[in-house]
Amino acid sequence: MTGIEGFTYQRVPVDGDVSLNVAVGGSGSPIVLLHGFPQTHLIWRHVAPALAADHQVIVPDLRGYGASDKPADLDGQTYSKRRMAQDVVNLARALGHNRFALAGHDRGGLVAFRAGLDHPDAITHLAPIDMLPTVDMWEVMNGVAAAVGFHLYLMAQPPGLPERLIAAAPDAFFGHFLDTWILRAEAIPSDVRAEYLRASREAVTSIVADYRASAGVDREHDLADRVAGRRLGMPVTVLQQDWGAVLPYDAVALWAAWAPNLVHRTITSGHFVAEEDPELVIKALRDLLSRA
Image (cartoon, rainbow, N blue to C red; front, side):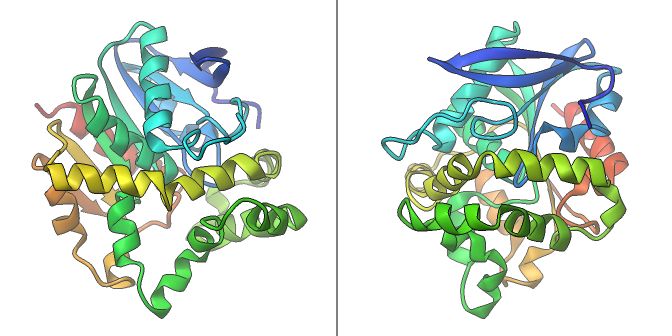
């Protein structure tokens, strides 16, 4: 799998010596699409071309993933979602957009959520997909049911052991999530799966740093915003599996506390909804972009 059909590729500097690999296609009002773990921008290969009929669609690899730069994490801040959200805002500005819509899946959803809080004047519409804000995520992970998120606890450990364990069998580790978080295995064909594994294999250290940040600085940022009463003022659409049935919580109530202008939809696909049910995602994003 070489890229998203009909899109052009470039590297865009976003933060000092950090550049992102970016696919760009279409014209019109801009929307940025962010991928999650353990994947790359290719998750949007069905959604992006459809949206490009009416919008300029900007599809980066996050810092630390895919073909984007993977700076060393020397201070525990390099992969904070605040820093990664700033990457996205800087990317859009470099492409000529001070305001844009933003959708993010999984880890990209965390970056999108942080961008919405930190840059409310830049984000016109927001779509977090199959994730919870970091502070809420840690609070609902309780008891035996939390074993579904074992990787969160593994990668939260201090530098050294998680990287060594994952690097010892990267395809088994990353492949576990590609195989168990999906309901329609054919939605990720073999060539795309191989690309996800290759990219993840080459990014173990930065992926762990991304997750480690969520056990530290990301939670602190979310908690500070919750205490301060900061909320997402733009129209928000959340697409989410029924995780509340597994880890008992009220997903709509959690999201409504952050987003007063909220549409929340429970999906019936697996985690990789942009690949398993792209038409649902396309419609949801078009509906979101039509809201004021």
